[in-house]
Amino acid sequence: MMIVGVLFISGVVVFLFRFLLRQSKKPTGFVGRMMMRIWNRVYIPMTDWAINILPNSSYDRILDVGVGNGASSQLLKKRFPASLIYGIDLSEEAAAAADQLNTKGIHFSIQTIEQTSFQCGEFDLVSAFQTHFHWENLDQALLEIHRILTPAGLLLIACEYSKIQYFLKDIAKKERLEDYLNGLGFRLTDMRKGNNWVCYLIEKKTDNDRRINFSRLE
Image (cartoon, rainbow, N blue to C red; front, side, top):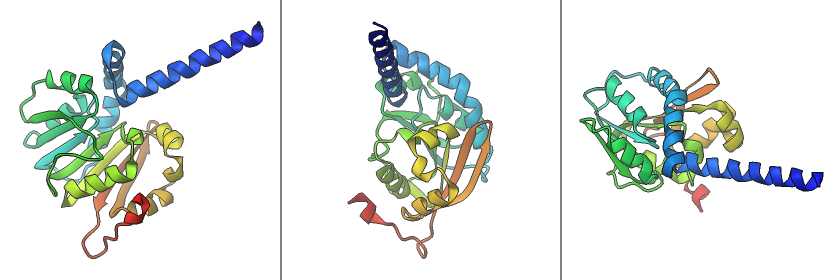
């Protein structure tokens, strides 16, 4: 009986873990809405910390990837009031919650970062907070970001470092990450850690030194 009880509890734990993992990728229903509220309290300080690392005082067009209920996009708008900001998320629940903010200069849509509807060179800055480790195809997502960034565009990624160690352990070390990004036409220009968070500032390579390794997608 004890073994049966242990197996039952283990099964419940595994089920809950997988359920919450799905919700973190694509929040739905009451649980999804509650999780997005929790994310605001936990991760908005991280988002604020990461935004302060950005080198420029203004960006014309910004894409915020994985917006949840739009709090990160609002924070970007507060920091860069003249910017036109687009936020995308896989979750209809998240996009609907973000739309309710009704903030002028921010537009939300349901899209996947692996294949967006945006034009080449459309954004000066792409941001992703506590989300990139959930992307279905990281290689393809980064190539899409490369396509929609301007030649001098920047990619800002921030998340809990524990998520990198769990989901992306192969590129957790700086040297491995640099090699990985190099193969996709990017250069890591800054990496910082603080309060169990990690932040990456990434730029597109110039035409002269850009050599994208498309074989990784075959």
